[in-house]
Length: 333
Ligand code: TRP
Image 1 (cartoon, rainbow, N blue to C red):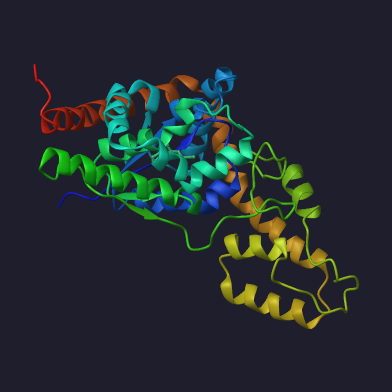
Image 2 (cartoon, rainbow, N blue to C red):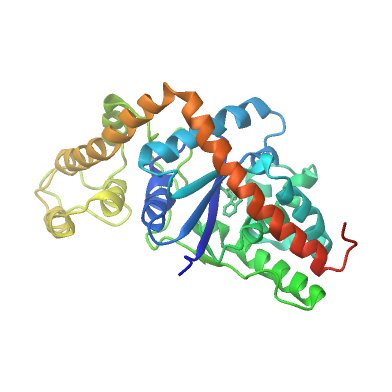
């Protein structure tokens, strides 16, 4: 029995944080035992909105790879590979660009949002506008049918499937496979300040390498219920960042429900719920931080993991590219 193929990845723009852990890394740990999993260090895609800072993109390759390994991604089970070193991805992107219109790219809700949030105005890098075609190349080159991503990425998977259908129609045969986005039920973890998006640049993230003091400080500063002024007052659980985090990380669901009931009733201080969250995050991040520090001492090992993963991915993606070139009826040598 061959396992279904997963392809997912991250732009290499900085180290990952616990939002990534809750949203995707945790799922990937499970998937590596049930699927054939590829993780893409998406440095070329990172460049589409970071062309002014290629140093950051390069350095982040190592950071993200360290994060993967530190949380328990096992290179014997999961293939970690580097986008810029897989020429077939670039070649497929070029072919796919002929099967998508500029209007369709501009209509993509993810792209629209990102253009707005990055303040590109009229100066949108062409590589940025076109990255959905490149992401379609990433996914299809591996013949992935399962793509675990955050909610914000769903329109990219839809656009991938559009391209898949167009290529298959042009080729008169089903060369490429449609993919399904797997989106975590819990939704996105907010920043420690309660803002919808946790991001390193926003200064509201807890890194996977956070020190005990950094974790404690983040929890201490966390937004709770502004109307819960005295311990005796009833408190709100909804919109309370501490409870949102407990929902994401507390494995003792029964105890958590009990704590919520107590908090709603009144008589439970913020310090108590924060202490519980601090304990849980220290226990989660502690071992990740230690493993990460150990691995960081051996960059040659991490580099080897990326190199051998990229080699394995190279033959896979090259084979798909040849099928597409041939399927489209281009000249073969
Ligand atoms: N767009 C993803 C992100 O922003 C990274 C990515 C690149 C990706 N190629 C992919 C995700 C293919 C899933 C599948 O992090």
